[in-house]
Amino acid sequence: MQKILLYLITLLVSINAMPQVTDYQNWMASLDDNAFICQLSIPGAHDACCSSFSGMSAIGAAFAGKVQTKSVQQMLPLGVRGFDLRPAVKDGKLTICHGILVTSFDFNTIMQQLCTYLDAHPSEFCVVTMRHEVEADDGDSSFGSKLQTSLASIKDHLVDFRPNLTVGEARGKILFISRDAYDEPMYGGRLVDLRDNQSDINNMLGGHCYGPSSYKCSWWVQGYYQYSDVNDKKNAILAMLTKSSELAGKYTYTWVDNGAAGYKETGTNSACQANAQACNPYLQGLLASGNYNGPVGFVFMDFCCDGDNSGYYGLSLTKELINHNFRYTMSKQGDPIYDADGNLYVAPKGQEMMWEGKILRRASTTQTGPSGWYKPDFDDSEWETVCFPIASNGYDAPYYSLWDGENNSIFIRREFYIDIDPSLDTYKFYVRHDDDYKVYINGKQVDTQTGAISTYRTARIAPARLCVGRNVIAVQAKQFTGAAYFDCGVLCIIDATGIEKIEDVEDSKDLIYNLAGQRLNKLQKGINIVGGRKVLIK
Image 1: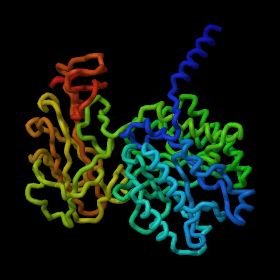
Image 2: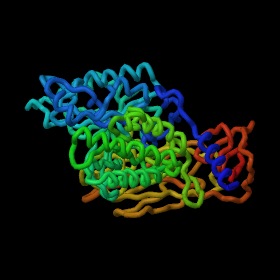
Image 3: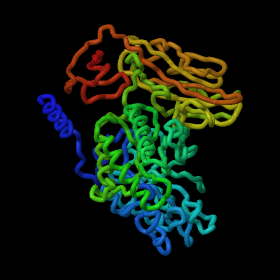
Image 4: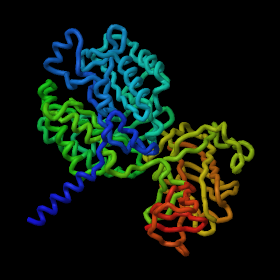
């Protein structure tokens, strides 16, 4: 009996300790600006405008197609931040549809409503995923141009997709993600290679998303919407949740869509209602259990704001997803990156964290860079800024920018910082290249190799090549034929000799830095620099 009472007390304490959002209109205000959006759990509305239909479609919606009861304007203050919109050209304008059924809402109006809400609640951002509902078109070929005109009219409210997009960069904005190509220029991002209606987790992981300046970001989709047994749908939700939870605190930049919408055998309203009554509370229960403390990603659900009395548990799941964001540790821009042995990447490899660098492209492998391009004081302000690793289309390794063509070369410059005498530790340069490459650090050549390599090559950096403060990596990489790839990083192998081990992590009067050169407000776990000495917090 005592054990049972102790268990109940422990359970009550843990439940009470769970953070609870009280202001769902502004719930993103509590998120760290530097948190990656791909680490979030975001409630969304599947077929977001399918609460009201016009004309003859209203008759059809009595049997199928009505999967929401509230409008987008009603969903926003309740905390919904993801919206699945499916426009088609009807009567010369972009109208939201569900299959051949026409809703009462047009695309432009909905996007303007989102902009208005974000202006009033600047801590928030919204994500719109769009699919062209071709079967509802009037045979009008102007969809692409109309969409372009619509997006251009609100371009100040749109944010470009990047795999490492952060909360702070998106606040007050809409991240627009399209499943279809449309007239240039691109706004937001574009989905490709998505796996449709898959129940096996291994078949859900092949999608990608790219933006105006980035490519090859994994986009996992659990979109198993048509099934013969609802338990199969539940198993698919669980499989993706188990997989995505493993991403907590990681720098994989993998985005996840774990859809709760679906139906058994037919797409009638009753089948969709039965799915929501089964799957919404099921996912809510999984999250409330505390066994899956990691990102869920986007959860586009039917009846997403309907209360428990309706049996849909849409509002409960929406709130559960929001609160779930504050129960696990997210990876953030600027976090220090360590290897398995606790050594610090002062310049992380792209496999650990996407990095930005300056790049100058040349049309041949024989062309040279500008005079002094490899020196620390060279002015590279006119060079292009891109995300690394960089590769040719289709390369298997992670990459975030394209390096096209054959028989060309690129010149790369990257900065990193050291805040302690480099002679106190050992530094290694890591590189993966396809094809030839040559690297300078602070104007002195460190390494060179001819031909491609498929694993990371290392080269020790002599302490004399490094300095306290700013350091500059300069690389020339050549591409002849076939695939192209480049990534690099610098690892600080920490010398444990003389490190002071302390347990106190309270504020210090001294200036405190980590080995990556970031000023800290207080001591953190790992190696800290306090008054020029190294301090280890276990």
